[in-house]
Length: 212
Image: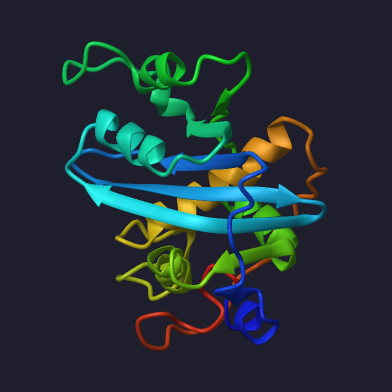
């Protein structure tokens, strides 16, 4: 995140192009936080032009948030559990989304990952092509800045899994975007397991964060 800021990739100049489609990637939650990234792909760049998160709302609320922005919606990337039916709603999140956006292939279910670590490294490998609107994406950027690997309280060792807290929802939504692109072959992914080491230092240990 700091390098993106230094490189000028976090800027008020990263604006929506109304002539282009806006893709959406979501991390879902009701009792938990739900997060949405709004992205436009322009050449090799991925321009994150908006972000929204909420708590305790049903999916209909987020569909309204999407529609109120009046973007030209392209792909909507949803995690694998969006297909699940619950007693809280008559239809699954996938079915609700397809009702609102019925174009063939518009709603994309991101397959369940065999390795979150490999997914994180896929995000790292493409992050240099990401640009962010500094105002509309500030909450999402804050989440990315604080996303980190967990620490085992008994051993003090770094866990192989990321910490699940307030920051993980925005980070997971970003990860679903990259994995959604990979599942559709819109770019080629190379997965590399990068070992994490070093003692914890403060709330976001150096080397344990989203970007290492």
